Image 1 (cartoon, rainbow, N blue to C red):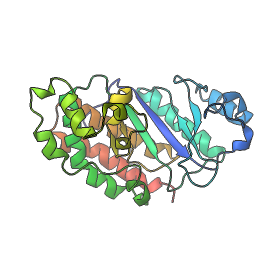
Image 2 (tube, one colour):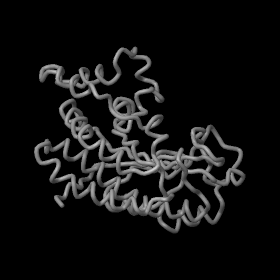
Image 3 (cartoon, rainbow, N blue to C red):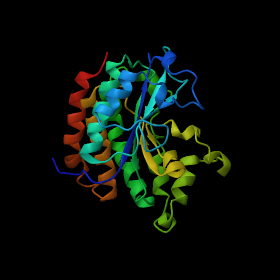
Image 4 (cartoon, one colour):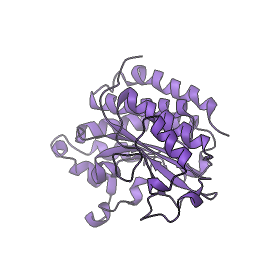
Length: 269
């Protein structure tokens, strides 16, 4: 397996249900105050070396009304990097599961990768790579049909054709690609956090909104091995696009994909 790991930061969003709301009501502006967490949960986070808080440099919990089943919550990570970041993911999922959180068909595991070093060429390369791998990704994830039609839709089939019309000269900035992604939307709509285009398996709205590329394909899980292998595969997609490895992509990315696909045997029913 060619080593594609880099210092590119990433973050995750973990949707779960059966979270014990009663422990920390009331909620302040949709964010769970850390001091309202059950003491044993707070101690478990501290014991694993994970910082709890309300700001973006901490592990934190926010309301998510899209999750079915009661006690729906989304756990957000701080910016993570490398092996330490993967360790934190595994520990956070372990703690959630140990304290009663569960996943169902409405839950997802979203991964954000920093894209500050991506311009038009890198984004085009990423789109072309993902379009090649997307059918295999959908095929691999079991019991994901409801999310595919709602929160992680396939990329538009015409995207390749549209990308072909974006010339080298126009690709000096990302404006050409932005027009293709948003279509006829007004600029004011594009600046909305919950812009409708975000609900694709590959979310490029996040690139213009917060400087990251978000992968939304993966169904919810609290299994550390599954989450880690998905993070590594999507990280490899980012690095292949950044380094211009389109010709070698299949050979380079296949081991990451196969590791992730093999890990799916551990998924919750």
